[in-house]
View 1: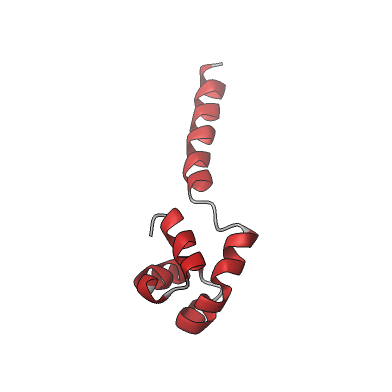
View 2: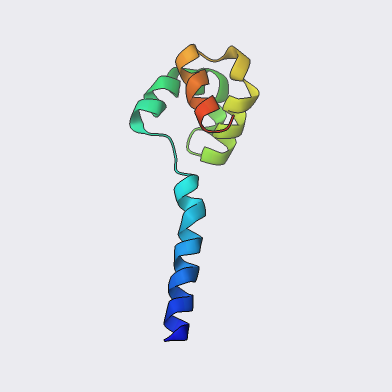
Length: 74
């Protein structure tokens, strides 16, 4: 009994970071599509690098993409 409760707690705790770091929605992806191609094309298909690149280029981004980046902690 104690083992199953502990296992359930560990499973639930491990799911929290994944939920908090969910990727952009399709609408958010569309908002940044042009900027991603223009400023960060070499990082397409590599989400961590793309996120970092968009943050680094935030001042150059369109208003809609900048809002997306800021909403994801950038």
